Image (cartoon, rainbow, N blue to C red; front, side):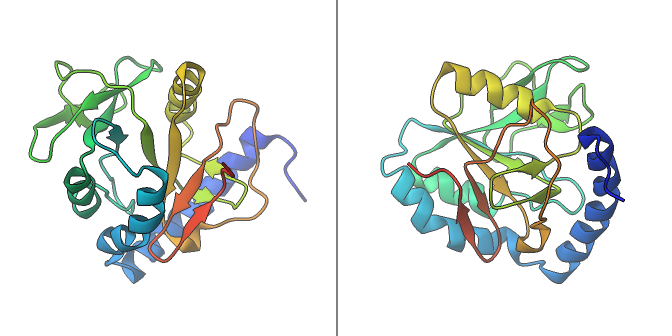
Length: 200
């Protein structure tokens, strides 16, 4: 029987897809460098002159693909400035703060590794977000805190920002439940494919 309440359906689905992601991480230890090969052409086409632009990455946890090594190095080579998210208060906003590989990270209010609060806040042009599941319509299932949805809604209200989900191709899931506050991905990057959602 289908679960009609999308919030309840998401909670049930998270249990399933977390285990699936753990298995995919074991199957694809090469994913952190393969994503760079997949991303080169489409990201270069979308952002032909990234000098002065900001790419927000994230500090991978557990089975998440961590973009801070190979992808960060390639983005820096292309001229991007980098940032990582920091949750500033319990259930508060997510702020993207300047980050360079090697910078000290501290625990934020959500318990995640984040730049120190004295680092400058930046408005990213590109936000790379982790996910538990995705579909080809740009729906994303996250951990349930709503931090990325709130941050993206605010960023999109201020101007153009591109949201790129990062995960394993095996995380594609059909029929993801949707709530009104959910922000859709503009594209998905996996170890074997770049899936465009945004049509412009």
